[in-house]
Every structure is written in structure tokens, then in C-alpha cells.
Image (cartoon, rainbow, N blue to C red; front, side, top):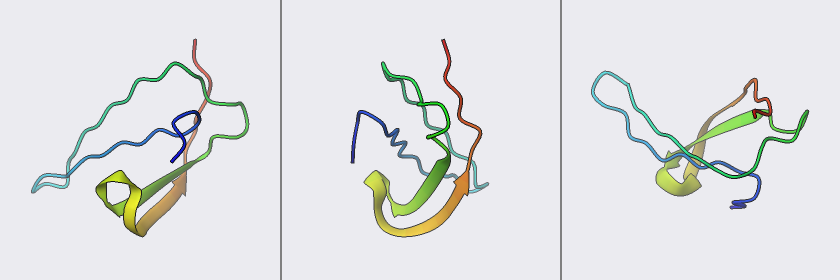
Length: 61
């Protein structure tokens, strides 16, 4: 885990498969480098990787 360039969101979905998480950090995404989301089986990035997909991350501010 690297808090200087990773955002970790722990959430649990409800009976409808809906969940919510939010994070705030003082750094921005590096252009052209941030592009993946990994969903793990357990909170904190533990357990099996259940899914991995790309996302449209962009610097803000």
C-alpha cells in the first residue's frame, strides 16, 4: 500500500448491490499513469482480486 499514489476505498454493498465510499487526498493523479481500479475480496486490499478495469482518471484543480 502506498498512500502517496494510491486511493484505497473500503465499502460493502447492500442487498441491492449498491455501496458508497469517498476519499480525499492532497495529491493529484499523474497524467497518463493512473488508469486502473482493482476490487479485492476483502477490505484493505486483502484476498483474491475479483475485478480489475481501467478508468478515466484525470488531474483536477
